[in-house]
Each structure stands twice: as structure tokens, then as C-alpha cells.
Image (cartoon, rainbow, N blue to C red):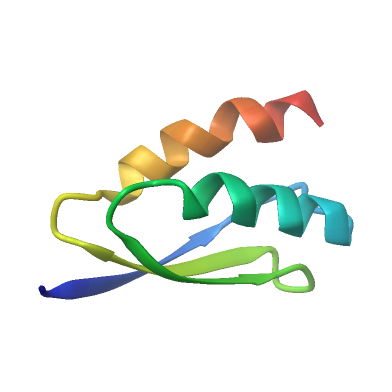
Length: 68
């Protein structure tokens, strides 16, 4: 299985609960292998297979981030 690494900026994370919540949501996506979230840099870096696109993660997270 070939894995690609993607890094996304997530504006609006402000606490450890945000990090945990985002990790929980993204970890449920099929094809995701490794997730690193930085609260201070407001980024998420993850490994995924070729069937999982960054757009899928963005689409998944946008409604959650807009709530806060």
C-alpha cells in the first residue's frame, strides 16, 4: 500500500479538546494511517492511501470548524 503524507492548516483550533475531537473524527476515515495534530501550528498532518484525498478531509472538517 502506497501512502501519501498531507498537511493541512486548520484555523480556529484553540484547545486540547479541539485536537482530540479532530483526531477522533479523522481517525475514523478509511485509509488514514497516521495523524499528527499541532495545536500551536494549527495543522494536521496525516498519512493516507491513494483512495483518500485531502478534499475529503477538508469536507469532513469544515462544518465542524465553522461551528466554533
